[in-house]
Length: 69
Image 1 (tube, rainbow, N blue to C red):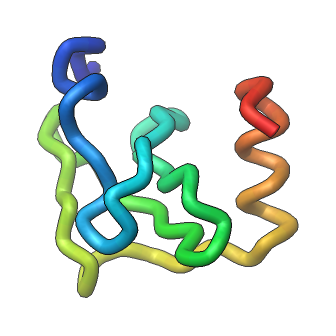
Image 2 (cartoon, rainbow, N blue to C red; image 1 turned 135 degrees about the horizontal axis):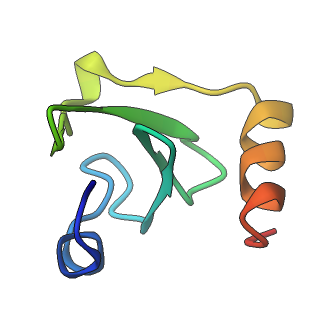
């Protein structure tokens, strides 16, 4: 599990937006990019080329689930 202290200082490498912890992934709060980054062995993989761009509906559903939208 990623510590809150780490979540407070890391951001999306593309948009510089805050990241939201969703299971074993981090989701960018930026609506324009909507990137999802994997967490492997408790280490966030914040490489743009290894990230996934979410469909707007999936991104919105994740944010709603966490009361961020």
